[in-house]
Length: 385
Length: 179
Image (cartoon, rainbow over all chains, first blue to last red; front, side):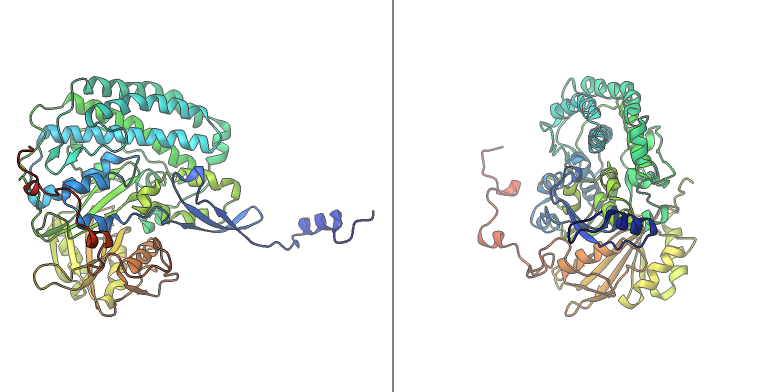
């Protein structure tokens, strides 16, 4: 059969492919900086050879706001509202290590009621965060329905948080020494309603995704993160636990009153997208159980310790960490005795987690890329802080 | 395997036994081990901390730097700060590595911990510390043509030089009669 000039005979090409002689060329593919699977402005510089990802380099910094410099110009009260904006899905948890660091340096004792309420709010925030990723991971893989359910369940908890703090996103509620104020009447009922709904309904939602054959095919065995690699990159949170690492600051070094509650740390052994998501979903129920227990034991009393009018940490340095929704959030605070920190190094979970992304993406397929990106559960504000 | 916490003094003893005189001024600070070490020993110190079975600080927490030039009355130098953590023994080690502020150089840790790569790139652009041996020491956050190293104390925020922070910053400065 005659072919037009410059066009190769199809049978010749087919022969080259089947014999493995076909010469392929690498191509540079830019994913982002705007992509729905990245939860912010994130670019992935992918080198692809056909369907294979030869190399993938995450490019970050599009939202860098220079918090570590800004905090040196502001006093501790002002910083609370800055760090709240780092990870915009775990806002109230971001405020916690800062408050704890200042309290440790100043030797402030936080009243029990404030500690319990902090645990409750952190865990409510974890449920909000995890339900958000539950929704978005499904959506990224083409399942829209979980989004509606997740947002419906989020609403009651969101309203409870709004009633207490006045904000739906940025709460600004933790102060060195305790809380801004006590929670309003009705908060407990509203929050309990929210968590009970989550406990009742989550098993049904789980089956929507974890029991779905298409979901399993797209996630099982995809994007495996090995245990030792996770350690070497400092990967923490649900992603590390999805790689079989039993690592949870709430259990290993209990802060606040976490040692008072009975809860399980979920881990899964395989380190693939499915296991990461499995861990995330199971943590929601554990968080809900912690909230229930904390309400049962909630003591009465003040919510603010004895704090001087001007918060001024004495000379010293301390590293404080807490279990954020996405992993270990640490703050290394150096104070020279001023009302501003001399240096505050903020170690965010998403930063370390995403630095391992290039390693995991290498030698996978383009069709799996979005599943892997989505299963790394990161927030760009937390990386770029 | 559940982690078993090692008491701070015990941890200090283990670090001293493993590192000998490479760990300068070892001490316990808020339950964590604090050591200083010379830049030329950093790679060896980090490897020992990672591989010693009694320590096994396998978890790379962070690497950053501190510019102490305005700390206290006379000020101090520039240092690289590394935090390693042992998930098995619940043990933290902070490594302070003083570097020469005039020409700050520190060997790279990328051969010991893969995660060090991004942290060193960030520290390079923010503090101007060169990490010798790093495979790709380009800017991570800042544009390539950015001048200066923002986290050095000598780098002032331009907007604060022009105009003071608007409004009262401290309770003492607030106008009387308010609250």
